[in-house]
Length: 178
Picture 1 (cartoon, helix red, strand yellow):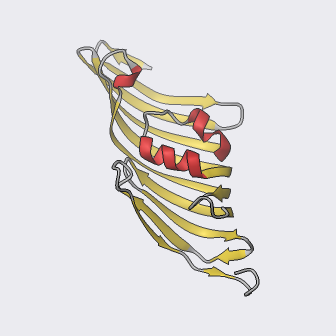
Picture 2 (picture 1 turned 180 degrees about the horizontal axis):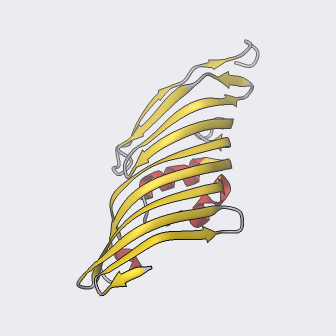
C-alpha cells in the first residue's frame, strides 16, 4: 500500500473466503470527504448459492437481483470486473457505481428463467455484464431432459422498470420429453 494524503494505490489485495478467493488492485483518490475508487478484481470458485451473501447489495443492483433470485446452484469459476465507484462521505449507502464491466464463467448452474416453469439445469455458460445489461452465452444445459444447443440470452435495461430479454435458444430431445 502506497499513499499520500489524497491518494492510495493498492497494488495487490488477496482475500481468501474459505474456498472462494478474490484478487484485486485499486486506486483510491480523495476529493474532500468523497472518494473515487477505480478497481480491477477477479473472483475465483464462488458457489452460486453463496453469491447473495458476498455480492455487495449496492454493486450492480439490477443484475445482482436477477442472478441471486434466479441462479440457485452451480459454481462461478471466474468473474473478472472493472469498476469505478464514488462515495459521498462515510455513509456506505452513499456509494454510487460510476461504471462496471465484467465477464463470468460458470458451470453446473440451475437457472430459473421463467418461474414457475422448471429450471434449466447443468447450465455451462459465460456472461458479459455491465450495470444495466447481462449477456449470457450458453454452452450447454437441459430442461426436463431436453438438451440445449449453444445459444444466447441478452437481458437489457436492467436498471429500469421495463427490462428487455432477447433469448435465442434451441432445445433438442425426443417427443415424449418435449
